[in-house]
Image 1 (cartoon, rainbow, N blue to C red):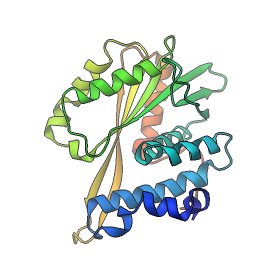
Image 2 (cartoon, rainbow, N blue to C red):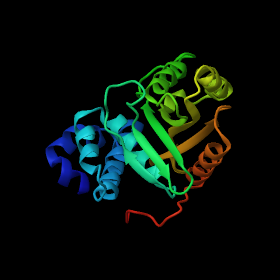
Image 3 (tube, rainbow, N blue to C red):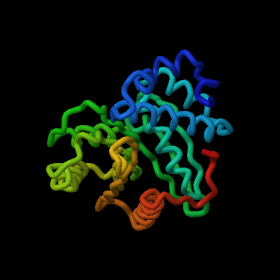
Image 4 (tube, rainbow, N blue to C red):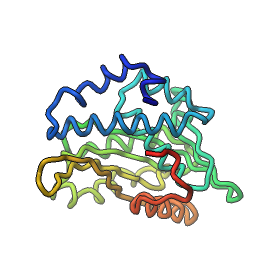
Length: 239
């Protein structure tokens, strides 16, 4: 209901049509239905925040999967005892980041860039390098920030598990702007009777050599919370 209230029933039906038209055991249907539910959750959580209208406008006029993942990252960062602000796009290198996180009393400001890889994108050895190179240009030159990357479930396999840390290291070794890469992977799971498919999110944390101790510790704390499904605060939504 929250998404329909703010985006309109027609937009929701059109945007998430596959959630209703595919078979109940089709993983693509499950993923689209999951995104529709999570969009409603983010709308509920964010509606009292000063950048809420920007989030709505961005979601309505951009690729929904990317916009929703940005919403997921905003929500994830709100697990921390910090001020989280969605940044307005400026179209200027070093100022076109997505999110700014400020920690009170620690003088720690963390710029954040969010990247979502299309579910149909092919896995190549250079794909991650290109994404992170682009992300680095969007982070401020004199600061060290975080990159949140979502990769397709189809990439999961022995080749990725074997090469991924090496790919990340190769991608960030020529920039000092990235202090950590948080990677989200949405995996499909069948129940014991193989009658129902569900979606679960898993996180991979990669701190870089350039991350100062305070940023490295904060990044690990956040990863621990995400990995265990925990929060510093009470849940924001009743569903």
